[in-house]
Image 1 (cartoon, rainbow, N blue to C red):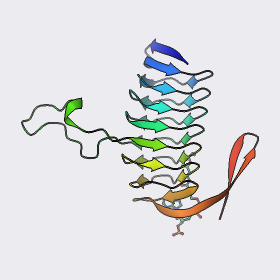
Image 2 (cartoon, rainbow, N blue to C red):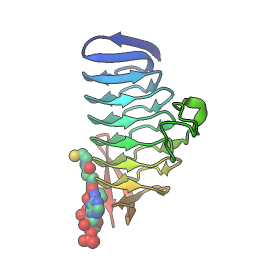
Image 3 (tube, helix red, strand yellow):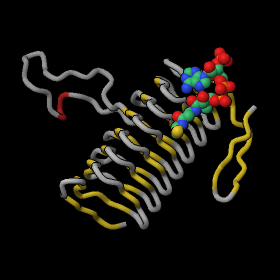
Length: 177
Ligand SMILES: CC(C)(COP(=O)(O)OP(=O)(O)OC[C@H]1O[C@@H](n2cnc3c(N)ncnc32)[C@H](O)[C@@H]1OP(=O)(O)O)[C@@H](O)C(=O)NCCC(=O)NCCS
């Protein structure tokens, strides 16, 4: 792992830790986060401080990965996916002063290995998405998702289990029931 900084008109990358063969596209805002070897970060992605992306992940364009999010290995994040780390957000305190980091409680979310999150999904905070789970496009995930499970909708509900994992040319294909 090495440190990477790049402040150009096309990329704002500040003090991130990256593994080997990480591919980062233009127009990103990445700071104080970790990105594992082989992962790809699409255009217009923001990854905040202390977020962790594992190895061989695909983070598609326009997604937002906030502080407190830990993404495992081989995870697919679709376009426009948003994570949340503050369940009761406020701009100001009761006295009208602007809130700072001390005024709210961060809630962590973990996405386990080989899970996939469909386009436009919103993942509420304090959530665990199980290994090899699949989140439908446009879902709002409000609860933990067990491993090998497909959920979809708002709020996301159980669709079906994924029974089998077959490794074809390095890609996991899901046999579903
Ligand atoms: C969730 C998903 C995996 C389900 O696929 P599937 O197992 O083949 O399910 P089906 O298409 O048979 O649909 C099963 C039911 O779930 C519903 N459903 C499917 N996807 C849904 C979604 N994203 N949101 C809400 N409901 C959904 C269907 O309407 C159907 O409902 P019904 O039983 O009442 O008719 C798939 O629809 C999906 O959203 N994949 C994500 C794709 C994506 O975002 N790719 C990103 C890169 S392009």
